[in-house]
Structures are given as structure tokens and as C-alpha cells.
Length: 100
Image 1: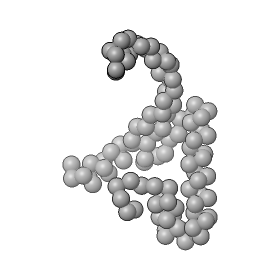
Image 2: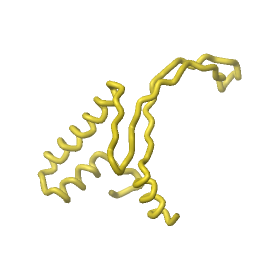
Image 3: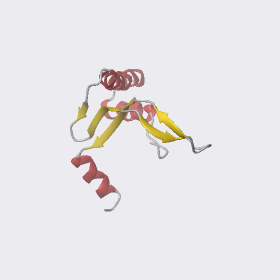
């Protein structure tokens, strides 16, 4: 990984180096994995990756907010959002890495 952001290309390269498959096969593997996660979330399913965390779709109800330009009240439509909750293992790992 070169920068502060992990990209699909970085994931593909890491899989290529670890597993030894061709870069094309690794790219397909990473894409399929991400597709499976996305498909599950589209269906409203929870995605639990042991030792990593849980992705979950939540329904947010309509609520009143404010137009930031005018300050007038404005209704915010109901929507679905994706939440992520890191596992205790991941939290501990990050805490150790950041010197906490």
C-alpha cells in the first residue's frame, strides 16, 4: 500500500503476493468478494466478518432538519444507510497499532 488509502488495486496486489495467483485472477477474486458483500447488503442482510467487523443496513426514518443556506426547516426523507461496527479484535489491533 502506497498512500494512506487502501484501494482495490492494493488489495489485488496483496493477494497476488500472498497467494501467487495471477494478477488477473486476484483482481477477479477481490471483485467477486466485494460483489458478494454488496449483494448481501442490497438484500438487507448483515455481513459479519469474524475478527473484522459487521456491516449492517439500517433504516432511518423521516425527520425534520434545516436548510443550511436559509435556516428554514426541511423534511429529510426516510432512507437506508450502511453501518459498520468493528469487532473487539479489530479495535484492539488498531489500538495497539496507534500506540494506545
